[in-house]
Length: 155
Image 1 (cartoon, rainbow, N blue to C red):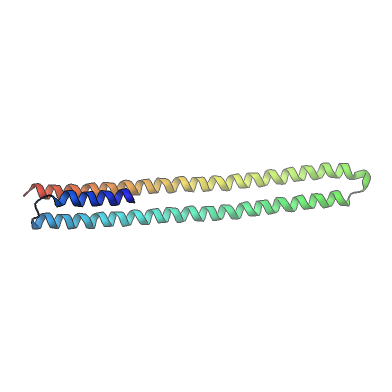
Image 2: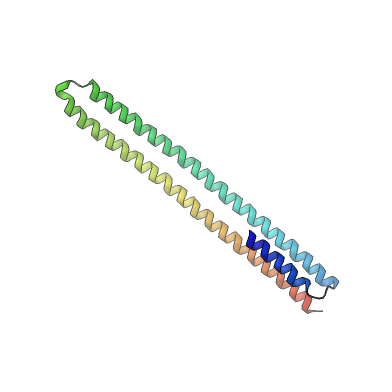
């Protein structure tokens, strides 16, 4: 945003050096309005992209929490079964518990990985949207400044 503002200010100073006829002043005013509109559009797109990322992150955090909670429940169940097992069946119960714990951990890891991947996708999409918005704004600034120079060249 600072670059855009600097470009806008530089454009205003550069164009103010031209002869200030009514047509040039009008072109400058129109250029400033066009630039302001472009910057507003960019700000909206950036805000929307950031909002989408925040929503995706919140959803992912929720999924991660659920996955971890479910894995923890499996850990507790497995531990209880081992504790309740007869002394001669304890090793067998521990082996079963280890398998269940490993399966629960694997399931949780998969869900967490999927959630993280969705967030990464959303971040990439947001970055793309921001870059496109910045490019459109820069294009609008360049066109507006060119229009002012064109008008000034007529006089």
